[in-house]
Image (cartoon, rainbow, N blue to C red; front, side, top):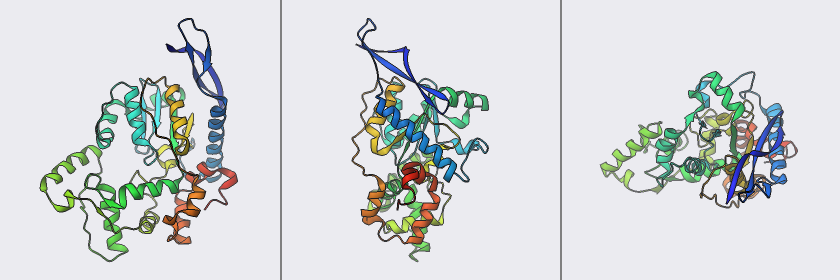
Length: 341
C-alpha cells in the first residue's frame, strides 16, 4: 500500500518560497521513501516560472501586477478548494473541462454528467471563486495553497476555439457563434443576422435557456450546421474586439493574472499528461481520471504549416500578436518571441 506522508517533502525554492512536494512511501514501515516528482520536471517548472517572470517584465505593460492588482470581477475565473488547499485558474481551450472534472473527482463528489453542467452547476457548488474571499482570506490562500494554471500557445487556443465554438452551429453551444456569427454577417458579409440575440451569459441560465429552446422544435435548435464564418472572419472579429467577454479566447494573462499571482506550477497543454499527473500527486489526489496524451506540436511550427492562418493578413496577425502579446511571450520565451510568427 502506498501512503503519502506529510512529514516527508522536498523543498524547492520558487522566487523566495518553497514548493512542498510530498513523497511516496512503500509499505507500512516507512521504508523506501522516494520523491514523487522527478528532478527534470521540477527544473522544467522552475524554468517556466522564470519565463513568466521575464514575460511580465518585458511584455506585461497594462497587465495586473502587485502595484496594480486585479479588480474583484477580474478574478472570477480563479477557483479555490479549501479542502484540497488548491488555487486553480481555468483557461478554456486548455483542458479546463478535464481539470474541473478531475478536481471534483479528487474531492470525491464528481459524477459522470455533461460538460456544460460541470461548468454551470457542479464546479461552482463545490469550489469558490477567489473574488468571494476577503482581502486577508485571499492573501492567505495565495500564500499557502498550491496555485496552477495551464498555458497554451494563443494561436493554438484560437484554432481550438474556432473549431469547437464558431465553425459549426451546435444547438447545445449557442453563445459564441450567436455573438460572433451575427457580427460577421452584418459587418463583414452584409448579410442579415440569423442567430439568436438573447443567449444569456450566465452558465446556469444558459442551460435552462437551451432546454426551453429545444422544446420549440425550431430547425435552428434541432440540427447543427456549418456556419459561414471563416477562420479569418473570426480573427478579424477578435481584432475588432480586443477586450472580449468570451472566456474561450480571452488571453490567459487576463484570466489568471500571472504577473500578480506567483503560480507554483505553470502547466503546458503540450505536456499535459505529465503535468497533470504531477499536480494531482502534489494535492495527494486519489483519482482514476487520466488525461489523454497530447500530440500537439510547438505552435511556431503549427503557424508556419497550418492552412488556417494562410488567409490572415499581416495587419490582422499583427493585431492578434498585440492582443495576446503577454501570452505569446510566456509561452515561447525570450529566445523565440522575435522569430515566432
